Image (cartoon, rainbow over all chains, first blue to last red; front, side, top):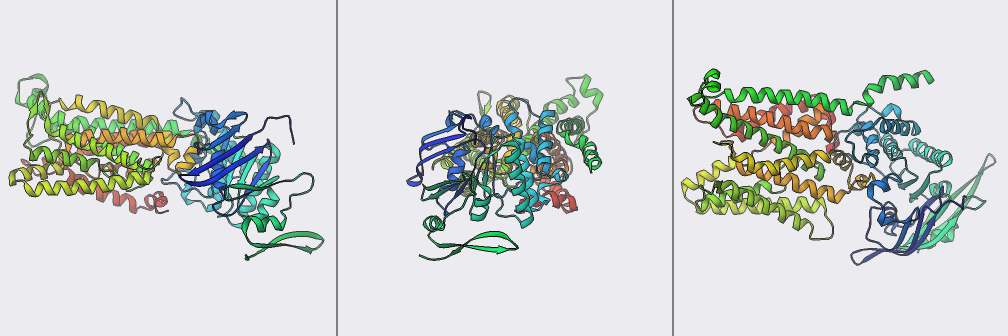
Length: 270
Length: 354
């Protein structure tokens, strides 16, 4: 991990409430370049809120959030969108756009004065489609694509922003197995080859474990634990799962043809 | 494999870079169509006008009919149709609702209430060159526009759902008040009210244009500028925000710009339905959803469409005329259905059912 590079995010005592309902309280977090931070926690723990704060979409928090050493509130939205991209679970378009048009929307942050895309924008869009292996989808209508293909197109649109940080909100939850694997493989490659920093909100413990370099557990708006993979792979202790999710959990390890497969098994309990 | 990949890129290169070219091609076609319609329409009518007389002898009856009634009326139809169609596009975009029209958020209700009140009070005259009926109508529309906005902001932040609910509710309130006034007025006045609400593009001078200009120009320019942002909005507010779009400001600006423009044209024409619904949808099927092209094309095509409808409205049953709103629906409806029933049309609208 490169310590000399500046922190991507530094959150200090971040608190946020919808009206009188506290969502996040006194959260501290530091994120370094190239980290993949998985955020886990029960519904209503503040995961998505945290993601939206990191994306600059919620701006009424108290405390301090610095992005690349500068208060997040001082970033202009378009400026921020050139550094941070966001991939939701699912995207519904209200109108019939082609996949390529959707990818080009990722270039909006770069179009301050121009009305149409420059050759540079098209280049970035094409490169993004290549990175997600979805060039063949470009001219089809977005609404006619399968859920998995739509997610690939949305990821391309996010990559067209040429971001350093990718915020992922349960990106594989609606996908079939093949597309889940494909998205994970592509994300992994983006991280390995381009050093993208990622923040991933998920309910999938195994995905979180295998994909993240660090895990943050949230419960009722507070950070319960912050696990980092140092040398060994990341392993979530069952006690932690029990504390975070209020369930009984145990880890079963099965060996098949010499390969160890670790499974977290969860039962309901009190 | 490599060959295939490069071939794919070669073959699609002309498609990749077409937004700008499509803009110019489509707008050139739409502009020429509108110009042709504008050049022909004023010459068509129950009274035959001789071109040579009208253009050479300013005192002739031909010139009077042409310049004092037909030409301003054609221009008003063009601007009204253009603004209503474009407003439809913007309302559908900011509410992310294909059924939204310029009238969904109560603009027409407010305008009608203003006009009906003016008729009830006997204000069909004008003071210092300002005719009171359209002024009252515009005041009604503006009151509703600000009230709807205020109500939608009552809770923190602006939500389009609150905007939609406030608009729809106020539209009903206006309709109830209109019925109440209608119920208590005498026959001649209630006929005038009814006639106003059917919509008519009758004008007798060019004085309407300076009063329309500021709102129309502001509305058109503002919505054109933000075309790219409206594109991003169609994937949702959060999605648009992640692309650097300032969503709340965008929606607020678009709402006021387009509502006031629609309110100002309705003040003179009355609520002419369907243009704001049918022109945007038809164009989306034909030219796609890119707002940078869709918005100006809607203005041009909406203008041409309403000029054609109005020309027919005043000629079909001459010497009287049909309410133009009846024709926009009667002509536009079947055409739209025909377009929709072709497989391509249904396909392009499929996203609406999500």
